[in-house]
Structures are given as C-alpha cells and as structure tokens.
Image (cartoon, rainbow, N blue to C red):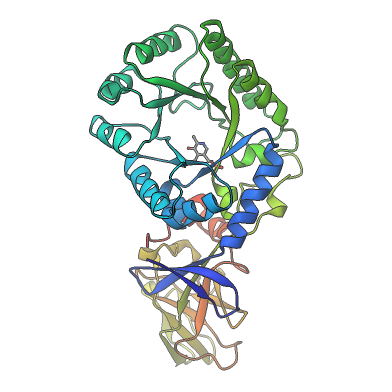
Length: 397
Ligand SMILES: *Cc1c(COP(=O)(O)O)cnc(C)c1O
C-alpha cells in the first residue's frame, strides 16, 4: 500500500513499501508537471496517452495511474491484460471510471476474458488475435501498422485489408490506427521519415475503405523531445479520418528522456525525476590500512576509513556495475546531502560506501540511492544501458 507522507525535506510524497529494506518516494507534483509539459508540446488538439506499463517504469502503476488521472490523463497504456486489470481496479476505486486503457504488447488466447471484464482496448496486428477476440464482440481494437520497427504490426496493403475484413466479420470495433517509431531520439532521422510515409499509406488505405477509427496515434517521449517534430503532421493525418490524434508517452512522465541526437531537446530540460529511492544506514565500521572490502577484495583500504553498510544490493535493482575498485571509481549514494562513493563489489543484498568525508553519520541515517544528485541516467551510464532499464529494474513494491 502507498502512504501519503511528508518526507524529511518537508515535501508531500507517496511512499511505497518495498519487500526489501528500501523504499521509493514519488512526487505527485512532479508527475503532474511532467504530464503538463508533454501536453503543451503535443499541442492542444492531441491527446497524451500515459504509458504505465512495467509497473509504471518501476514507479508503481496503480498510484501513478491515479495521480495522472487526477492531472487530466484519460488514456493509459499497459503491456498486458494483467496490468490492465490492475490499473482498471485502481482507477475505479479512485472514482476514475471513464479512463481508457490500451493493452499495447500483445494478447494470448487466455487473456481474452479479461478484455471484456476490465473494458480494455487492445493493440492487434494478427489474424490469430482477431480470431481469439471473436468471443469478446464489441471490443475496441487498435491496429498497429508495421512501418519499420520490425516488432509488432501489420503491413499496409493486402495484409492490412485482410485484418480489417476479419475485424468487421468478428463484430469487433476498429477503434484506432497506430504505429511506433524506432529512432525517435535521432533528429532528422531518415528512418522516421520513411516510417511516417508508410503510416500515411495505411491511413489512405483505411480512408479509401471508408473506415473511420476514433484514434490515430504515433510517437513517444523522444518524438516530443525532437525540435523538428511538427504536431500538425499527426493532427492532419487524424483529421483526414475524422479521428483524434494521440501520442503515447512513458519515460518523460517519470522525468527522463533518452539523450537526443543532433538537436536541442524540447522537453527534457523541463522534466524532473519523480522517483527518489531511499534506504537507511545499517551499520558503520572503521576500516584499517590493508583491510579488504567485499567479494574478490576488489577494494583494499589504503588508510583509516569509515565505511557504512547499506541493506540493498543487486537483488533490489542496485546494479552491480556501480561497484568500484581501487583503480576504477564506481557509483555513489547521498547521505546528509554529500556523496558517499560505493566501495568494492555490490552484493546481492548489501553494499558498502565510504562515509569518511561526511560528519556524524549514524546507523539509521537516510540514504538516497537514486534521485536528485544521482539519477537514473547516472546509474545507466555505469551499467551501459538506458534510464528505462534502471527504473523498471528496481524491485517491484
Ligand atoms: C513503451 C511504449 C511507448 C512509450 O515510450 P517512451 O519512450 O517511454 O515514451 C509508446 N508506445 C509504445 C508502443 C510503447 O511500447
């Protein structure tokens, strides 16, 4: 359960218990501000679908969906029907019964009853999916067009014709047409242009058949971050089908964005991280010259040193690549607003940090593992990955 609490800095936050000896604090204010930044950039005509898949990128899908609904979000994107059911229940309990929930990452035959039960919209691209959904007549389908992502999607032309026929035969509702860009963080990408052209072809095909879905959607956080992105491309495409335009944003809601390549970012500077991941000091010990720290003794103490033990490790999502050796600095945590460098190898459930430069550290002191001062981009740099993987890798509450 989430508790509304005022944290040590006097900010109002939602606190989520973790099954481990750490917790995350969410700033609902930052979440709402980030959503507002996206809405402004998307343009007033365009709906911003809030992506809350993967436990809202590690932030807790139920609480984020409720906070976003209160900030004005009407559409929510989840990966599968299990997440869809959880978000539906949470929103209903908060009195947000009109929200639309889109299952974006595929459907298995056993998922079909949940589609009806929880009033989920579903992204489809295969005849098998449409066949499976026959027992859920009236369900709203969003057809994904393959334009270059090579992941999900039906190709424009004969394949799309067949799929649209099957949808109307099964008395299902063709409610949306969508695609997903693979290189949105590259400004002026020829790939994105090709994908746009291919998507236009699908829109024309749907138009020629006289079909009118309610929604046309494309683009994610990086799309809105691109200075060359013109929201009118999408709104004109939608208008040609009498549909509403929509973009689907995830990472930016939580305050992050992939680095933009080749231009100045439009939204990234206006976003702030929503999550602070915290723990407490478990123990403090004085180490002497020659003492070793952690597995493989990758760090050897070269002078008297005060070391704090933290009750988190890689099992909790603190990536082992933040470990250090005497020759290579690693990551750090923040205690009393100062950096405490990680010493030696991070263990499964424990981590040691250098607190020699921080006065009066005591067992029980609060520690920031990730937040302002050491964010998910910093963790990602050490781990050779992206902020997305760091955030959704923090162990689920
Ligand atoms: C995850 C996802 C998004 C959101 O992407 P961000 O880069 O996090 O904004 C949008 N569309 C689809 C289909 C996705 O799977």
